[in-house]
Image 1: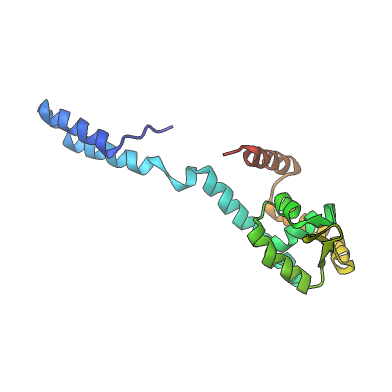
Image 2 (image 1 turned 90 degrees about the vertical axis):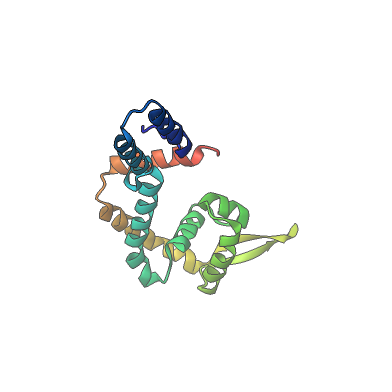
Length: 176
């Protein structure tokens, strides 16, 4: 872990050096540059590693989902529905980690593709549940081949993938 000195701290150090008449100004400048360059190197950031890995996985899925005319996010929602059908939009948003604002247009597109239906609840006309159509259920038969192909393209072993998923779940479970 690199200690970070603020500009204010360096200014105080520089003043002390000048006061003591020690001529190490160049050394301080070099150290200051080293500190600035080593504080937040992109390749050493967990967030960036997760971000780029996520983008790469999405790019792996893109050509696999293209024949089905699905985006990766739509596929994620369908996978959640294949696990548990006839759920509220809120429950589906929570399961997938998507915001309700993201869910509305996404569900509209899935409904236009006739993969899902929004059904009003009999006891609460304001709440709708999301239900798979027959076409949506049939699509699940292709899902295993897609996810297996995507997994193969990662180059990970089953153990590595399991460990990585466990670590990701641990990060997600941490409350800010």
